[in-house]
Length: 416
View 1: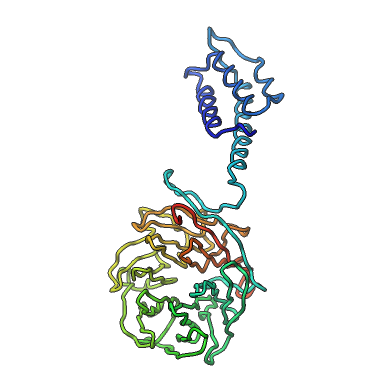
View 2 (view 1 turned 60 degrees about the vertical axis):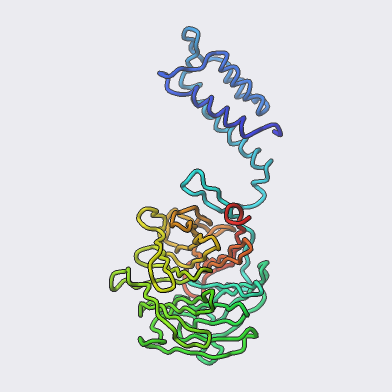
């Protein structure tokens, strides 16, 4: 099997396919048929079924051979088996089967895909509920929101569980990371110096902490006025340190400085008809552009810092999202990574788009095995070629889900 080459299999496949074409088309000359069978036995030691294929029944017509349907069907089965075994040998020989690759090819045959499953970590318990958000601190640790318990599960970059931080409650340093319907939309966003903000969804406020996790300040209350929150669902920090808070019910994106002062508002819902403000999340790219994931219609929209619409992902032209887009991440080239919910049909859990809005490929087919995604919620890139995904697990109800943190390593063309 060591002498099997992909070119041998492709050449053999083309020639036998042509030979087995409609009887109205030219069929193989006896010498040509003999050569194909000889090459078949060279690719793999000649088994009994191949010897039988060299024997009648055959109908001789002039100087050419026309194979009857029984022999034609046998040869087709033989070819399928041969190609499957040969392809397996090539894959093993080239090392393609040494890791579970879960990337899904782009519709474009010229696209190059590079994302492979690396590991899965569950921590000490079933702590993840659907809707959890994740972020990476300056030390490279991954913070995963655990809405049911009002805390964050913290993992090392290699996947080892480190600790829990936080607890349910209304006092300073305590959190309610759930919306009124039980969905978990609480999150955390880090500054480069290690200080961070927690979106305390159920308490309708934002809490700020220094790099040592000491409480600094809190602001916000339930309401519809500036700096108040009706249904805060998204948080992120821009490249200039501006804090962005997305309120779904108010239909507004507010900007705060690091002292908690409201410094501006961005209308990211002006392109959506009145009454369709529903969104799932926000992310701010390194160039300051703002991405909003929509509930209706299923799409992600990109805005500049003042609210001008720049790009729509999953427009009618691309049509790849089959469920609500949830979490997002943007790499330095402007490629968008976005998760979609569990009711999708055939598309992967993570969709990847080019900066121009065109769909590239997907990562993580539907399922519960390593490298598969049932309900991918949180998403984060570490700038080192690693894509972290919070998998919500089996959807039974709050507190009963078997979630995990998974890592996919990016390869060419996504990472050198």
